Structures are given as structure tokens and as C-alpha cells.
Length: 176
Image 1: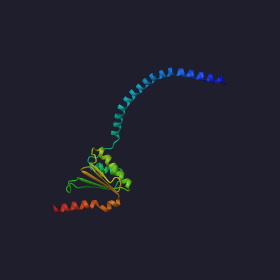
Image 2: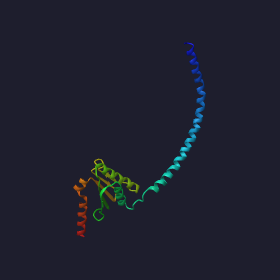
Image 3: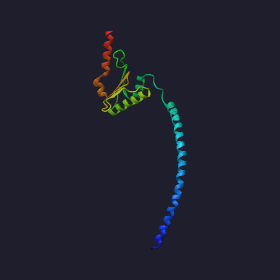
Image 4: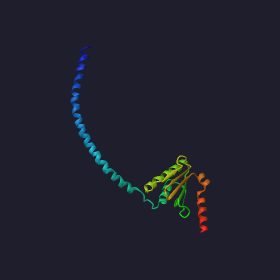
């Protein structure tokens, strides 16, 4: 028994002495493989974004001209309900257009507002402010010339913004 154990130890030491020689050869091969792989990786991303950008630009639907049209298209795309566009240029200097839409649930209202923000950014208009996203009952997105109200139907009925702006519009029209 004791004679067999030393034999095993000698075999183990032989493999240990040969291993460092092999290991010394490996790093040089790995370095060249890494360099060639990194060069290929550096070249590949430069070409890939251009191809992706061309594919994206071809796949996009034509963007409507005005910001209000971009907003209504985004709301319509996400199945917003009762989309109303009010022209308030003669009534207030705060905004030119107010867009009001309803969502079916608080989650739907939040997603409608998020899509409006995304599409506005794509059109080159960064939102100036967003209010009410946490609760999701009424989200206001301020895009400068366009103000977007996305509400639950019960909240929209309670505040009746369309009637508020229609009254002001009709009063101003009768005063002139």
C-alpha cells in the first residue's frame, strides 16, 4: 500500500512540472486572439448602428407636422378615448392648444401620458413638466404650446374642462 501512494505522487508532480510550460504558451495565444477579437468588435459596432439607423428610419411611420397632431396620434395609437383638441390661442397666453383624453384605468392613463412624452421627444419637443403620474387619475403633460390632460372618465366628467374652455371662448366671442 505504501508503495502505491508514492507512485501516485510522482505522477502528480510530473503533470505539475509540465503544466507551467503549457501555461506560458497559452497567454501569448490568448493575447493575439483577444486582440483580433477586440479589433473585430471595434469595427462591428461602428457599422451596426448605421445599418440599424437606416432600418429604423425606413420603418417609422410619417410623423405628423404639428405637435398637437403628434400628441393626438400618440393618444390614438394607445387607444385613448374621447380625444378632444381645443384651440385656446385667443383665450390665454399660457398655451395655444389643449388636448384632453380619457383612459380606461389609472394604468392606462399613465401609459397614455408616457407615450405622449415619448412621441413629443421624438418630434423634438421636450416636456416642460409632468404632473399626476403617481396617482394616475389625471396626468398633465406640459409641452409648451400644447398642454395635454389625460384623465379617468369620472375625473374628466367632474372637472369638465371642455365646458370651462368653451364658456371662456363663447364669452370672449360675444364680448368682441
